[in-house]
Image (cartoon, rainbow, N blue to C red; front, side, top):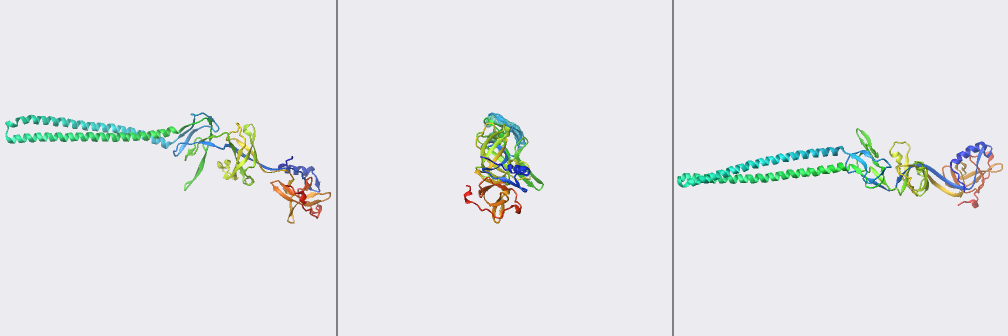
Length: 423
């Protein structure tokens, strides 16, 4: 079967204007049965259907210091991303300084309590000595007057009371010292736990691969901030120096067994594309690898190429599923996608410019022996360059590509012959 591409019209017109079949200055087109195909070629990017994200720690304002190359193959345990957080590092340094200060404070507290207890113990020993002296003096009580006996008894009682008072102080001091030291030790332990948590967070900023495979760099959501001082935009492709405001992937492990193409199309082409339209995909960077696919869906969101760079030309995203993936087809490679918008096998079609409206009917001007005969036609599928003729023509007719002068046109319009209707 034959196939005539839309670009053939221009070539045909140029050729016919020089050496084609003319009647006067009217260029004609020979109508023949062929496969009618309307297709467009759009650029796209290869990506995996399923990607396993590599998420950074849930810490605000992380900066990417080092990142695995896009498309690099890594082994489990390899360092794939190094992040830094000035706020976290400052917090860790502050925590360590606080612990050192608290430990020094604990040592001072222990020394102060030890000194206080030692003083009380010395007072207790002195009190016990005074009490013993008072007991020795009591041996003289039978040889002294009654008044002196009462005085000695009071001295003994006073010494006992003083001893009891110092013993209570010593017991209280030991209890207070123990509680105070335990409290400070607990505070230091809590600070060490917090510091260890911060240290673990800092350690987590060096991210390692959890499995073997190829990695690709991710895209952070684009966030636009506006204020009285101006506006700014954050996000886009993750790279060295990128500031990550929220917990979004820095890398992805693509599933190489299922691939699709993210294609960018113009608004006019977007309207013509429908689900399940077939496509031929060519990846030049993979030794001009060619495979097939089908349109999965289309989105009103901007295409990938437009998300990261300003453009006045509005494009939209179309996702094309790849039928069979090849090992050479890697995510991130560019691909040309030939999408077949409309197809009809073995049918008649004419250049759209050859169809004219005449008295509420559509006609083409078929070249006769002397004049052009207006022939009523019923049109079918219409593309940007060609229109399928459902009824009115049988094939092998020469139709005018421009409306012939009235002197070259027959007066009678040939009506549609129902027998010429093509399904």
